[in-house]
Amino acid sequence: MMNKMIVGNLLYRPIRSLISVVAVALEVTLILLIVGLSLGMVNDSKQRQAGIGADVVVMPPGSSYIVGLTGAPMPIKIGDVLRKLPHVKVVAPVITQISTNGTLEVIAGIDLPSYQALSPFHFIQGGPFQGPDDVLIDDVLAKAKHIKVGDKMEILNNDFRVAGIVAQGKGARKFLQIGVLQDLNGSKDKASVFYLKLDDPSNAALTALRRLHASEASDLPGRAGLLCR
Image (cartoon, rainbow, N blue to C red; front, side, top):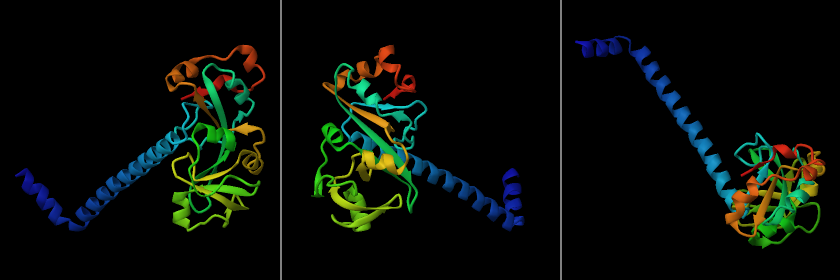
């Protein structure tokens, strides 16, 4: 009897039943779409961060798990203190900038020698920076936009020359020199994240948990809130 009442009610008001079905289906589809996009962004970020080659990542407190969404809140002098930690071989400061010009993307400003010391770039075409107006891009972006070495591209309302195309999976798809990006976003002597290479990856936990001496931290505003991952 109950089933007949339900079916009868649905058939008696077919327009309302159809609207209800469409509404529920749309809600479920949007939820699955949002979850899929979020998981995709997190997994893509995780894979690209793994390719950088760092053993420890130092970020400010409250940072997003998607590296690059933090801005540049840390003094770059923190790198000098981090280099004094036991087991630390390389400290690579990186500044990031979110760009929404066409698509949402993270642009990385790097110190090329220290960034290369973490894990070297594999240059598919071209080579390192030759001047302040050079940019490195990965092969995914190059194929998608049909970009070749020597081409011009606009980044943050400035024109840059593509100096090299590198293999994907190195943290970002566009790389500028750290000083250039600091000037463009008004973050002189600031960094968004520090990547640390250790003498042995098994020492990562010891390095992340070690507290810096108070005298070392006194001249570095905000150092106490650093987060090691």
